[in-house]
Image 1: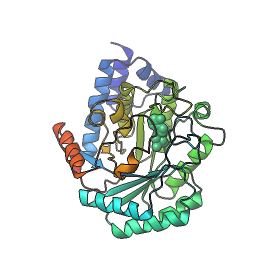
Image 2: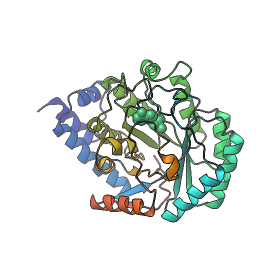
Image 3: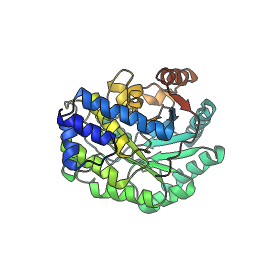
Length: 349
Ligand code: 5AD
């Protein structure tokens, strides 16, 4: 029997693997080891979540960003990006529309935009929570000070997504300009956890310069951090970035890793990402069938959706209309899952 199959069986049985073993499981992966992990991951997700898939309404509220990450289409040096910033009124209207469609979690995602001071964000958060006290609010707005995170939490934010991007300091430097430090990113994640947020970390699969050993470090970092959520999708190039000519990340490896993450963190909230849906036809459904349990359709207004381009050909489907949402529900139903209307908090770890 090949090594990866034996290791996949052990992982599926709930055994902890060493870093070396995780690396072998990645390096020597086969269709058979993938299927063992996949089946066990789906079973594991079912134990906690049944056949329920949580929907989150994503609102991409600003694409201004002060950072210059080499992979990202909204990096500050990309002069071609058409910048936009939604007004608080428009954001509140997106939430109202999302609420009527059945969403009970809103994710406010944006670049690191200094226009959005703590005061402005706090007023916005308070207004959303006042209009929709039964909804959870997730922020995904990058690195801030501990005091800022505390103020946003106090105003009513419940969750925070901040992918660590890579747990390896050298690889981190390959992806980011010198001003950005892995250390600070990790500090942010621990501050957020400490302040009582439900926290999401994660990485891109196939980011330039990434080795399989780096991915093992990512998995081990996630195990140590014990986040409530893990966001993970393939790297996809954007033509107006320094990584324009780098190859896209693989859907196959992303699916394999989704199964591994599900087995390592059985109760984690694990989205089938837009990037996965972009590289692979039916990618989000495939993600669910590899252990994911969250989908984040886009609630941003149609006219700005095409401007929030982190990468090329980004899938812009989802809940842009009641029709889009009905289609998503049907797709999930077709694979035996039910899209649920619920806050979908992280189960106690
Ligand atoms: N391809 C895939 N994912 C990307 N992200 C940013 N740029 C890209 C890209 N080119 C991801 C990062 C970030 C999240 C919001 O989107 O991991 O944390």
